[in-house]
Image 1: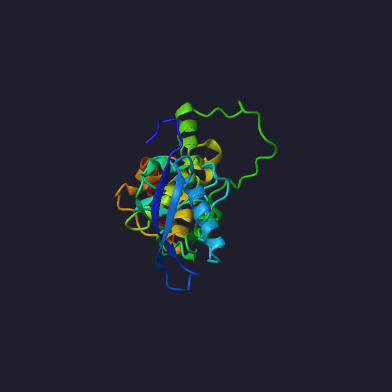
Image 2: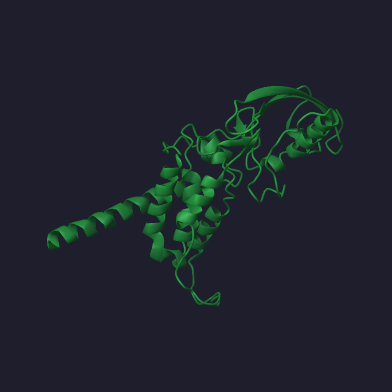
Length: 267
């Protein structure tokens, strides 16, 4: 083994989930990955494996990726049971092969959730997240031109809470790790970064209701506070955002009940 600044080579065995399309049955296939540089990212390692498959006239492994800088949220696979792999606060594209040892056997599979159907191999359809955002993840009031930054002061704790929630990249690791396949951490982040700001306050309760209702419609499970979502989130979104979302949703329910009671009393 060389020094910490030297490139090393390791030999790996990969058990990779292969599935032709969402209607076909899937299976694990085993591939050898010899001479992998520890300076490579996990996706670069898959590139090398795919190059060998193509040269052997075999179908390459399909996987999601885009920016490869931990920003876009497109990448994401389960590696030996861990969403995004063994390192905390790290996306699959940022995971380097120095995190593994020579001779390791790696089981690589897609996110597992009924709401994330497999498209092919390690690729899943995460458009359910887009529909949740479309249900209420926006501010619909007319604001005109961009206001002067200091016209609407935002308390520092509120601004920081909003920014922490806005760090969510929508990768879906929280869903993959949750025993219930819940999307509550994702939804709470997308609701929370708007609800914490003055611009999002007028639609605070309707936003929480609409996005949770859409989440349920998409078939995600319920949150039972296992905490697996926070543990695997590459942006370290905290469970406290789920608590705030539950509070906003409960507040919306109370407001609706008050309106119904008022109408009934007037009748």
